[in-house]
Length: 440
Ligand SMILES: [Zn+2]
Image (cartoon, rainbow, N blue to C red; front, side, top):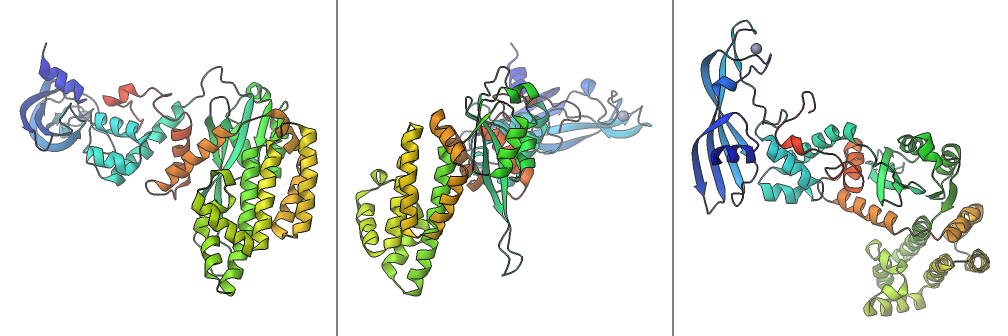
């Protein structure tokens, strides 16, 4: 067996002859000098054979790791010669194993980096492959765009339980000091059975969800039995229109989000008061970075945090009341019987009224309006662990790497990490050796 051919193939190279090999065990590097095989060279423009050698152009190309040699560079002598089809002018021979957009990287290295990017942060991939992280990022983007048209949902996917989740995309820079900064969102369509995001779209309007749902056939949409959403009228309207058999429910995950937001509104107001009265203890306890301690359910808290919390509750009646309302709210959602839930809800309404806290009165109004959908959730026993897990994953991917200013990149990255836009579901094996014409 010819081992040099095996090396050529393992590195994703084609139609070349190895002329020299240099190894460095300290640097774990391997340098190959290769030359294109003249008789196999084709004009890069017209594809016809090249007749006469004009010159050999030297190019440096990075290859994928070869066993322990993690850093492989290839010095390629590329043929330039006369092409009789292109008026006898001098043309370069095609190099089918180099990425058309990343001309100093072999396709095999690009595909390896791309696969790593499906699971790892940009900085990690850049370090392992000794590549520039901006290059890796651009490569990942290009690869996702190439994969997008090939993406399809698995056959026989169980779509009986779905959810629509909006996630934060970016807060636009403030235009002036008066207007509030614009916050942009992205809507994701989640399949509960698979625990995956099937599709997504910019914004959080009815139209956003409509776009998401359009990836499903009318039959698939009709098979949806339960649809979990936030208390968001445009979503509810769209579901009613497009999913004739879906029972709408406002699930725990979205309710918990709302009650946390409500408490945070209260915290901000109390923080402002503490600032005005220069109360350093309360300022510390109510500062934004501690907001999660305040809404965490008590059994999950550390001892030290609990002590401090007790002191705060003694000092600040509004915070104490707010915390009681949050805790009662969670207990209410623990109910598994609609009658029990209703009793508990009536009690909660009463507590809200007594507390006089405006943010909670606003929430109570919302709950009153959507009570039917919340009861549908209590009845459905839907667990939202997967939704929460996916949202955490999205938060992580947003924080790692560059942050996303480009909407399409963000949408694709979500589908790659949480959906079907990756090599587990799209076969890209051949991309180690070649890309179909016009793909990149
Ligand atoms: Zn030609």
